[in-house]
Each structure stands twice: as structure tokens, then as C-alpha cells.
Length: 354
Length: 229
Image (cartoon, rainbow over all chains, first blue to last red; front, side, top):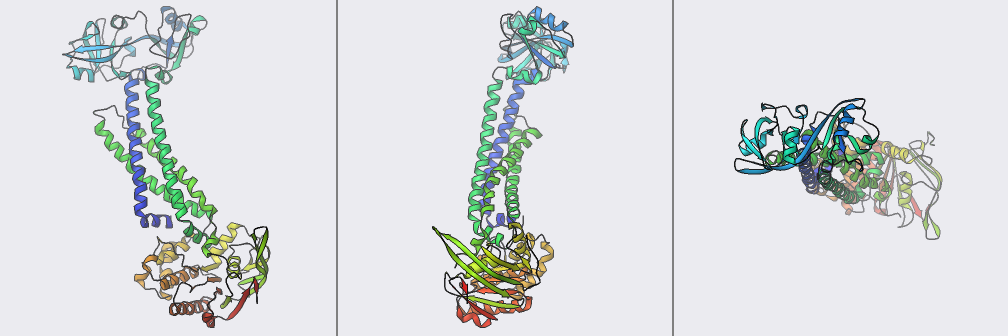
């Protein structure tokens, strides 16, 4: 890094410009990644937090089951078959519906999960809801001024708030927890949506053909809009990283071409190709590392206050992964550029032949 | 594969070098033989296109001849790999370029330390030696801290010479060192080259077409159409 660091110091304007580009792109990717994580959390936390290993989607006997909370229904026969299947420890029905919550003069969209007590998150206050009662998340309680013992209207049903749970959401709508019976009345649905299953194994025969069991993580794409939303955001992030790699590659291509006379001199006085490539890559690493770390820090600092207003997940992973990706892809772009060093002819340092 | 001999610092033995020139080949060096002992300065003169720089390039192991043998510091180089030749240049050969060819981002002192760094040595330990060598070619402390664009043409050429000498070379190859300097500064650079050749015991080959500078050389050879006269 002897020459590399001094080159950066000498051409500080050019490297500062490149570093600024790295900072801005990293900041943007970190912010997007935090937003993607936050949106994922708001779309999936109710399902992802279920104390189950698998989710079973169902369909009528004449249709094939698909991984979709919107299209799935599980009938009594399927429920009984899964409960009786060898290896299955528990199979509990779960009803999922979207509706409107009205309370304290304000209304908002919520998801209603009808389930047994075991599938619900631990209560922060109050008691487990019975028929005609619900448990709401802290945010819903705060936004609507709800307390244990108060009343809410879900759809057209007036219900009593029995308990307050930690915040969970489904499809970006805060989750309200109820019994299956209450859920059925609120959602106007006679059959549960899916089964939450623990243990291995499953039924055989006709029930196996009309149900589909997937791991909990694999059930998340079945949440309406989740896969498209995450796919779009990841695509934008990917494009940004590829663009940054191309920009870094273009910068170091121009820089390498400009340095050809100096590279020729260094080769003429005995520098090996490996030494020069290592030196150039160390230079790229210094610019990328400093830029990506600063961009990551600024992205995290910007995301922290933003998380109060938008779904934003700030964690080591949401910051470190894009920073590392930025450095690695940038290095790949730089590596393609600096390999030109190996083709520089040291003879050119001597000038024209006579 | 290289072989080791106990001969003079630089030996070119029946060296021929040709270049492609359209459908035919142009002969740049035609059976050239030259022996340069340590501590002597050999000047090579001749018109443009006579093959002087080709001779220098072959002696510096920057080009591989079509035939013949090139021995540097006792090592036969024509069979060496690119990596071995680079290592030989690092350890045994100093090149004084026609244009100073200094790295723009480095100070005068750092030009020398860069050589130490690529040799794998300790830059910190070499700092005093670099200062001493630059002092010996006439650059004071203030000038040692300047970058090339802050030095005069003569000062840049002195740094160029100091850089070539820094690794303690057996062979010093000098390419038209005064072409960018006025007569007075050119004469001072020639005096310096003659002095360092004696002082450091290098086998120095100087390519020039300025016959006014030849008085400092121990031997003068003339190149014409790729042949040494």
C-alpha cells in the first residue's frame, strides 16, 4: 500500500469524488435494506411468530392446495386427518381475515387471527380472549385509546378487549387475536384458513393430496403481496449494488489507464505484476471500505429517526450485509479494471526505440 | 534456466534482436557483444535508430533477444522467466530514465523508499539511507520532501539517479540523461554519474548522442545500424 495510499493523498479530489459516490450508494442501499426488513416484519410477524414448525394449506378435495393465505381453507376432515397423522405432535386450526377496527371514533385496517390460546403471543396485560372478546396489540391500543375492558368494533361486531399483546402484524395490518368462533363471526368464514403443525410426518391418501405443508419460513410468500413487495425491493437493491460495482470498475479503469506510465516505471525497476495488482486492489479496498463504512453509518443514523414514521428495521444484519456487499462487489469491479496492470509493458518506460 | 558465471558485471555476447516490421523483420541489434566491468562507465553513441535503446532494453532484461547471451551480475538472463527478470532488476539493475519518470504522488525521498518497499524491505529503516543518498546527489532536506512538480529538471534527474542507485545495483543503465537539460546542468549530471560509478562500483552503460559529454566515459563505443563499432 506504499504507493496506493500516497496516490489517494495526492489525487484526493478524484478519490473523494469516488468515495462520495460509494457513501451515497451505500447509504441508499442500507436505507432500502432497513425498509425492506421493516416491511417484511410488518407483513409477516404474526405468522413468523407462531409456535409451530409447519403451516398446512388446504383446498377442497377436487383442487390442489397452494401456498396462499388468501385461497386456503381447511375442513374438518383435513383437520382430523392431520391430528391423527403419525409423527404430528399438534395440529391447530388458525383463521386469518382482514377487516376494519373501529374504536374511540377512529378506524383502521387490522388482521384478525382466530386461534387457540397456544398460538397467540404472550399477553402483556389482561386475560386470554374468550368468545366475544379480543386481544389487541400495543400500537392498536395506543392509537385507539383502548384499555382492557374497553370495547371495539370489528367489522360489524362489537367485542370486548380482554388483553393487550406485543405488536404483531399480517400483510401490513396490525393483528387482533380472537377465538376461532369469534374470528368466524367477524370474518364470515365457516372454516379455518390453515393449520399450525408441530412434529414431523403427515397424513396420506386424499387428505395429503388436498393439503400442502411447508416450513414456517416457506409459508411467508403465501401472505398477500409479500413476495412481490420483497422481490421488488430486493431487485432495486441488487441493481444499486451492480451499478455501484460498475461505477467503481469504471473509475478504476480510467485511473489505471492514466497510471500506465507510472506502472511501466515500477515494472521497469522490478515491481512484479502481483505486487502492483495487490497495491491497486488495496487502494480500491481503502476507498470502498471507508466509503461503505461511512455510508453504512449515515444510513443507520438516518434510519433510526425514520423508524418512528415508516417501517424500518435497524439491526447489525440490515447494515452490515449491504456494507459488505458494497465492498465485495466494488472490489470485483475494481479487480476487472486493475487486471490491465499486468498487460503494461515496462519497456514503455524507456521511451521510443532507437 | 539461468546459470551463474564469475564474469564482468554486464556481458552481452553475440546478441541479436529483431522486430517485426510489416512482412519482414527489422534488425535492431546485430551480433552485438559488449563487456562492462564494475566501476567503469561505457558510453554508447550513435544516430537515432541505430539500436542504442534496444541495447539498453536487452541489458535491462526488459526484452529477450532472438539469440545470444546476456549476463547480469554473473547470471545468464535469457532463459529467465518474467518473474525472475523482475527480481533481477529489483536487486541488481538500476535504470536512469531519459525523462526522470518519477511517480507524481511521491516526494523525492519516497521515490527511493518505494524501491525499498517493492524489494520487501523496511521503509522505516531505509529512510536514513535514502536521505543520505539524496544528500550525496545534492538534494537538501527541504527538496527531499518535495514532489516532482516542485523540483527543477536537474533536480528531478538527480532523484532519478539516486533511485537507480538506491538498491545497490551491480549494473547502472542510463538513457540519455541530459536530453531534457541545458548544457551546464547536463555536465553536472554527467559528473555525478561518473562519480557514482566509481564510488558505488557499478558497471555503467550510458546511451547518449551528446558527444560533448563523452570526456567522463572510460570507454566510448559507437552503434551503427545495430552493430557496435
